[in-house]
Every structure is written in C-alpha cells, then in structure tokens.
Amino acid sequence: MSVEGIRPAARARKAHGERTRRGILELAVNLASAEGLEGLTIGRLASETGMSKSGLFAHFGSKEDLQLATVEAAREIFIREVIRPAFAVEQGVARLWKLCDIWLQYVRGGVFRGGCFFSAAAAEFDSRPGPVRDRVAEIMKEWLAILRRAVVEAQAAGQLDRRVDPAQLAFEFNALEMGANWAFQLYGDKQAFTRARDAILERLRRHSTKSGSTALPSQKGKRSGRAAQAK
Amino acid sequence: MSVEGIRPAARARKAHGERTRRGILELAVNLASAEGLEGLTIGRLASETGMSKSGLFAHFGSKEDLQLATVEAAREIFIREVIRPAFAVEQGVARLWKLCDIWLQYVRGGVFRGGCFFSAAAAEFDSRPGPVRDRVAEIMKEWLAILRRAVVEAQAAGQLDRRVDPAQLAFEFNALEMGANWAFQLYGDKQAFTRARDAILERLRRHSTKSGSTALPSQKGKRSGRAAQAK
DNA sequence: GCACAAAACGAACGTTCGTGCTATATTGGC
DNA sequence: GCCAATATAGCACGAACGTTCGTTTTGTGC
Image 1 (cartoon, rainbow over the protein chains, first blue to last red):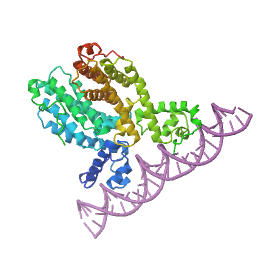
Image 2: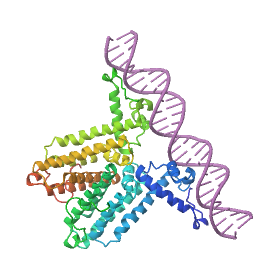
Image 3: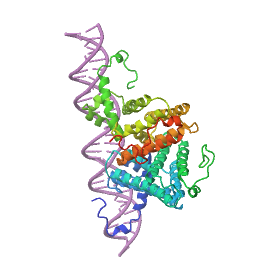
Image 4: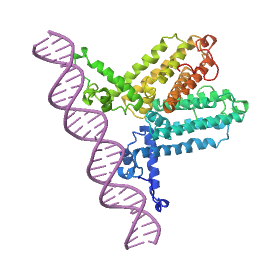
C-alpha cells in the first residue's frame, strides 16, 4: 500500500513533486527542532507552506513517515553543515577539533531554529519506542562513532596520547557540546559555547603530543578565548 | 479567575483533598518525565489514578497549573533525593563530589521513569515561552548555583585550586551528568555513568589540593573505576 | 489537442484534547 | 444531626488532531 509499488513508468518523471517535498521538509525540520517532532502538526505545516492539509499529507503516508522523512532531512543538513566541512581538514587532532568547533558554531549560528535537532529529538523520543526513536538513536551513534574514529586517527598519527580511551573522549566532547546547546536554548547564554570550547580545547591540549598541538588554535588569554569569533 | 480568590474561611481545613492531590502529582511527575509535560494528558492521568477527568481537573485550574504543580513536585523530590543527602556531607570537595555522585545515582536508580525530569522538561520547553519554561529554567539555575557554590566553598576551604572558574566547573559537571542521562535514556548504556563519573573525578583530582583529595574516593584501577558499585 | 497521471484541494470522518457547567457524595464544625 | 464547604462524578462543548475520500487542477508525451 501507500507508496510501495511505486509507478513503473512514471517514477522517472517525478517532475514537480520532489521539489515541493523538499520544501516541506525544510520547513518541517525547523519547526520540529523548535516544537518537537510530535508538536510538528500536519495542519500547522500545511498552513506554513500554504498548502492544504490533504495535499501535503499525500506526500507522506502517515505522520510517522513524515517524522522519519524529517529526521532524514535533518541528517542531511547535519552532514552538509558539520561533517563535510570537518572532513575537508586533514585527519588527526585538526579534524577532531574541527568537528567540535563546527558543531558549536552550527548550533550558535541557528542552523535550526530550536538548536540541535537531534538533541531535541533524542530527548523527546527516548521513552517512546518505535522507528523514529530507533532512527534517531542510530544517527546519534553515527555521530559518536565519527568522533571516536577521529580520536583513533589522531592517536594513529601520533598526535594524541595513546592512553586515552577514544570512546571516553567522544562521550565527554559530545556531552560538553550538548551542554552548551542546552544552556543556549534555555538561557540564550552564548558564553556556554566558550565554556564548552575551552573545556574541549583544554582536554585536547593536555593529551596532544607536540606535533598534535600545532593543529590547535593558538592559546589566547585564558579568559573568554575567542569571544570575537562570530560577533 | 480559577483558584485566585481562594476561599477565605475554608483554606485552613483542606482536609482530604491535599492527600489525593499529592497522589496525583506523584503519578504526574513520573508520567511527565517519560512522556513529557505536554504529553502528560489529563485524561490519561485520570484513568491512571482511577479518577474522573473532571474530578481530577478540579484540583488544578488549568493544564498549565497542573504542569507547574508537577514541576514543583519534581523539584521537591529532587531536593529530597539529591540536594539534602549531599548537604549532609561537610562543605568542600566532599560535598561537591557528593552532589555529582548522587545525581548520577538518582538517574541510574530510576527515581523518575524517564530519567532526569528537568533535563527532559528543559529540552521540551526551551522553545516554548511561558511560565512553565520560566520556572524550569529557574530551577535549573538553582541547581547550577548550588554546584557553583560548592566549588567556591571548596576553594575557600583550601581544598580546590583557586584559579579554576567555579561557573566553568559547574557547567562542565552539569554537562557530563546530563550527557550520562542522555546516553542512558537513549541506549540504556549504564557505562555512561562510569564515564561521567570518571571525567568528573579526574577533574576534581587534578584541581584538588592535598587536603582536598582526601575527600575523594580512592583511586582504583584506571579501568571502569567502581563498576561494582550498584550491581 | 487529447488523454492520462501526478499533484493539490476541500470537506468530512472519528478521536482526543482541555475545559466548562451541573449535580451528587463526603466531610468537618457547630 | 444539620449545614456549608469540599471533593468527585457526569456530560457536553469546541477545537485540533491524523486520516480518508472524491474531485479538480496541472503538466507533460503522443
């Protein structure tokens, strides 16, 4: 049923529909990051796009499918905005640092209206079993794995102390980032980004070998590091 | 309107109602920690308590009042379960550590079905202005202030390096704790508690003076610290 | 220009939500 | 044991939810 046995001949055409679908999802991601994936209502989304409820609904078979599509769209944005730029940098401490730094910028810069989409989605669905929860958990595991791998690569390159546990460091960095997101969303506290940044940098510096620490930004005055960055 | 101009004469009596109200809120807190404060529906809460919707509703003037009362009830539980036990310990590094340790235990032990009530509530309401959001933000600020003050006291007692920024340390500890909560809720990963614990302890030890470090648990083998703790 | 499928629409469905009204138990003070 | 206040129940409401249906518009291949 639904969109399963697609349309053998058509399919290739799919002229206009794909574009509107993209447009819908773009809006959906932003709405959901602020109001939650459950608070993302079809009526609201319809009026926001200027479409009718039923017209919009036809693009997805059910609300759950809409939620899953929204999660997927958010993942692509995340990859484009965070992962890709960080992977443009060479392996090692440099990339590890870039991953964290860009993440903080991506939240601070308001790529999503409600802060990190996945932090919000994870909190919302962590007690709500189902495909949405599963997919969100999977995606966040991907992110943690990327962080962990970056640590391992930095160690392999001789830039990071081999005694640090990659999973432990990934956990800590992720926690600090999400902590900054939390403080910013709840209090509008931009200093939280500096705090997370400082904490991560401090840890990176402490465990870096001489060759690794050249990949880190130069140490400015202890206080408030790079406050001028995005001002 | 609602419960504003209360009941001048009565009020003092308030015989039976208070008990049922307590009972309702106890259930409400647990439901809300799992399904969210918005997902906490009056009908659901009524059937869960065996009351009628309207009977239950009469205890609170509106859903928002119910949410606020639920938040307050959660705060009291948090104080009883975390703050009070930690304040039974003497000021200084010992209390600071106890605050973090008990927090982790309180989440791990499942005091609330859905993990830390306030992490969930903050994530849910951070983009939803109103009294509920304000109150939640206020309560979390209290918590951060308690952490910060514990750091200051430890410094005043000469147990902690005076150069560390109390707000920074409070931010980091809080982030690590919430990170552990996140990992546990999403993956059931109990190791996350060990990770947060290790990270916090490591930081405490590094900044402790000789007299301060005696207040910390003895350093067991680097690996997995106190895995046996609650098993 | 005709035919046909994709895309969008408008109206309605059954449910559930929060919230009022009104009536009936239950209770404490005299 | 009565009275007033409190506590709970019953019922109905308007709105919003996700979803379905039949119809109309739109766009292209022949």
